[in-house]
Image (cartoon, rainbow, N blue to C red):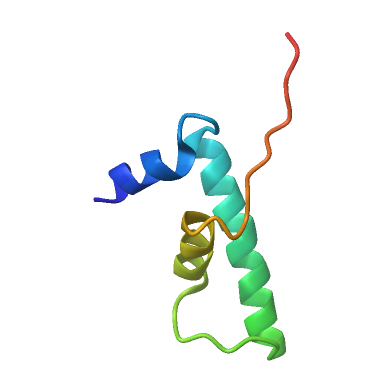
Length: 67
């Protein structure tokens, strides 16, 4: 179930590694906001971050690497 939605999220443009890193960074931001009392969520930060990327609230940009 999650694999197919990951493929839909990536659409062949980004790597899964980039998605994992982006979700982890966003989850860390959400966790800090929750600790400071800025945001109140009943869900886990990783799940919220995953849903944000799934709903295209945030985009992933990868730097081009020249060989």
